[in-house]
Image 1 (tube, rainbow, N blue to C red):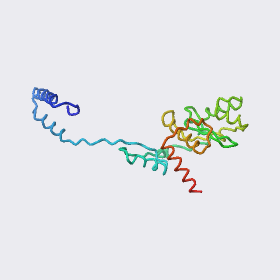
Image 2: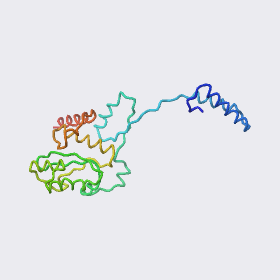
Image 3: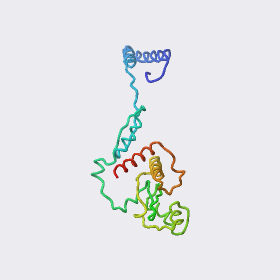
Image 4: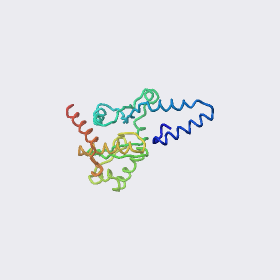
Length: 217
């Protein structure tokens, strides 16, 4: 009864019905009054909204400071939990291409980069631009870059780099957009320029990393 938004008349009617039922079952109806009084005196505490971030270093703290003036509490998670460290075994370099996620293809001659995503294995994804290059087909942006500039191509291990392993979904889309923005900011990407849409968090993150890199030099 107390969880519904009832006006005074309806609430009194509900209480009378409950009292009638309690009385018919030979219980003390004063119990209803005590419960109603207790509920009305309880303080309704506001519920906090939480945002969860995977902690990867100082960059995470820098980004979360942007939320200091909004009613959102920040919590951090980590990927390298004790359970994962104890239960997983290191994999050979070749096995990293058996997962899905966000990847980078680098031109072996000019080192321009193409950022992409796949819900299949990275190995299967690499076979597509490799096939387009082999048969002089410009379907792939990366293959088109190599063919137009008379560049060479190499094996998966030399051309492809795994940036982030994840399954298909919003995390994969956001991660891909972030890396595309980074390479566009550095004027180093082969992707269509229209794919690098402005986003304040990406811009903040990229500028912070660039500033830190210049300081280290």
